[in-house]
Image 1 (cartoon, rainbow, N blue to C red):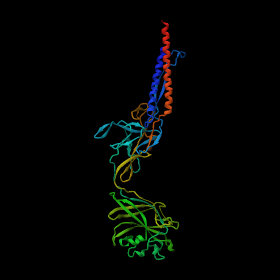
Image 2: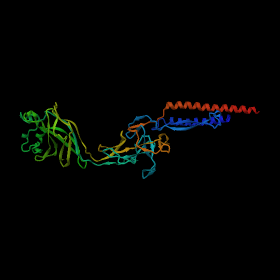
Image 3: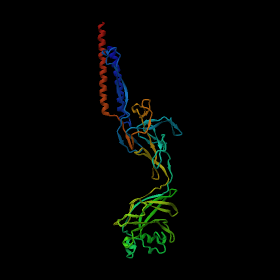
Image 4: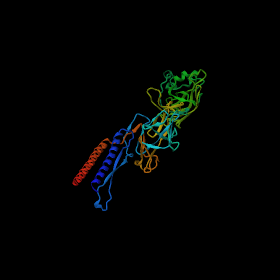
Length: 466
């Protein structure tokens, strides 16, 4: 060991510091790259052989790359619905296209992994991130969101179509006024149900619309019916072909506890079955159920929380049997200064056919499609994978990684969670990188000083020979 060894050691030091500088420059250059994972430098000493420990010298140095794939970058919100980030452990499964055939991407079948989540829908309906990697996932049940398989595939959403769904259930909740305000109330005969805002059967001679009577309102009786009932709202329902049907509802009070004796506050629900009914045609149809209330305004009957409307039709449009869900406490009778019904909820489960308009990623990792009929339907689930040796993955261009023997094969599932409309930024710490840059520069300069000193010593040795 001697002067020439010192020169070789210093050259090795310059190479190691140059390698560190390359990593630092790459980290700084990618400080704004989505999902970028920096590379640190690990220095390893090279100890030359010696016969005894007391003859060993410090030796040289070499440098190795140390991945920081497992270090989380900062997650920030985004306005793009298809962007997503992983909080915690995990990787998106992706593939790179090898070309296009008939304007359709072709894939090699090799799955890579990335945390870069800036995916957007391209012309072929695929979700592609900014580095050109295609997102993979599995189809899901549109109702439950449960996966329909376990093998990820490249996702594509193009010309997705949802067929029409006929209305079968109506969710309904409202408060009926204890004393309804009707047009006929002020002129009704004292002591009759009409004087309390109700429907007086004497005004419907020969066709009692109440439960137990004819249960219908004829076209010639529409004027009296509307004067002795209150609006219950309306909902757009859909028949089997997806054609919208305007379903109008009205409530008529048919009995009142104010009449004394055994009288109980009772209401009947009607739906409009023929908007253009003539004198002898049915215009409104009774739902066929007495809704009764206690003195405290709570519903006492029906007790099941739902009512079946049988054979519902509006004009020529048939809706069939409908289930009216009122739930527990959904329909009440409390005092109201307006004397009108207060609709709390009225919705239905039918819709027209629709075409896919856009997709977005939910916080549960589901790809949700928005269709032209206003429906939001689960289309696919984004799958995550993890590795036992995360920091031993092989880096690829574009923030992707390939499995290696040291990383182990990909394992389905991960402990991390997907956050929609978000992006994970670079994990580069600029302040830390600049600190390392200064240290690296000083170490590089110090190695050049060793070379200068060793060179001076060699010159001195050569001068001795002159």
